[in-house]
Image (cartoon, rainbow, N blue to C red; front, side):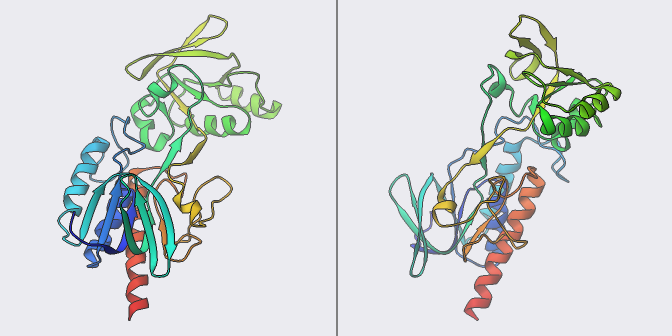
Length: 302
């Protein structure tokens, strides 16, 4: 890392959104530090899709090329480590990492993602991102027309079943316990040949993350090749909250159209701000955050 004690911007999180922000700032000639612990939330995903020019590449391939390109900008530095604390100072902000080192900056960008909370079903986490999916726009084409399940119940399960019906006609909604669907919802799903199973799960049988069968507590099983689930989550990094950044009702960091949080000088981008979880969307938000942070700095210093 270059010997700089004070940066214009510190970016916490060096995956797609953070790297995109770093590139925008590097091109604006700003001194930038990208702090990254090397644990992207999509690490298990075999391939990334719906990203023009990168469709079908592995997340690792995209990230490696992105970092190589950002490294070409000599005002951008990298630090491998985990940011643990952040504070407001008279001259900007400080970020502390696990090694105890402290870095200073005029502005902060958090591209820290979220942490999915896995249901307590044996085999679920092993399949997450591989055949247990969150987004049909990212993965639905690859499992189109296959025997597909939805893990959900009530309004959430109903809405997800309606959406996924676009990609397959062999669809079953698994409520993992007594169904809380309304009579109207149940009737409409059945009319569309979407089956509803309310048996409780025992475990998921899989082969290296690729689903084979659902094993129910009553000893029966059901074959399934792919399944969708919308899990609860928590913010991967709590520093934004400690600085006073507000979260919305869903738990995402509140940002305006310029990726600014509710704290002046603090920006956020990527999965920590929206349910639109795709590499392309993260890159777009990161680019916007980098551009807006640099513009704010340029105009304030004029």
